[in-house]
Image (cartoon, rainbow, N blue to C red; front, side, top):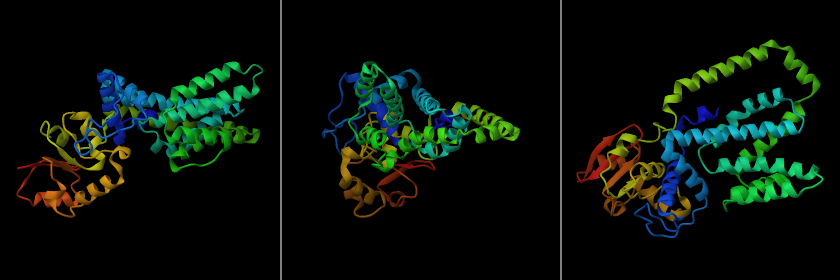
Length: 342
């Protein structure tokens, strides 16, 4: 599952996080102002996940995007291992735990993208293991030190980790993004509950279940092997790599929301108008950009300052630019079209 999930990088945040990590390594300091866009250039920017950014940037320098995808796949595998270890500590059967993890993986796979939240998921599970050891230990100093070190190492200052701690402590639901944390914590408990003698006897006595498991594993391995050469590629259904390569150097780009991150990574000298750093741009800027992308309002005013436009073909803006004498269609892909001002 981790390798299958790593085949296509579909999360826009991953790309600008790699670029930010590269900038942090090059400058030997954490950016405090936006260096990447032309619409918010120089504005104050609080970077929460700088540790993750630096880590993925170092991996990127060594192995490119395939390396980033592989590293995050290893982290996902580690999360799965922590779930199984925690289930085992609750007395769950390895057979039941493994089956339950596989059956519930479709519910988790959408959340297991190459983002800092992977660290949070692993941290919550490790936190529970430490707390269980702390409760049962006669001399708790060691686990306390480990707990403090864990908190210092993974604390990123955002709501996810704080909410995850709250979930681990009192089982509350703070936000939609905490749902994978709840599921990961629930799996060991459910596995322990399901590890009853009757269930285990039934599972071990049915060769069909064993054969189905072996067949499913073989199919997963074969499918992963077939797609392994494309490991870490930007999802071709979402990202127009040829159009991004065709953007003139230094051209101020007006772009679709999802495309800004990959442009920052692949064309670092091209300032973007928007990317998925919502905390930087603010809701008003995003809404104004969406109106222009939909082709509404005065085109010249909406694109003032931009020399290039990278937009989804179905957008109203793309249709208006195709009909405009002031803009030239330079590259057309299913994912996006690139226009350059004449």
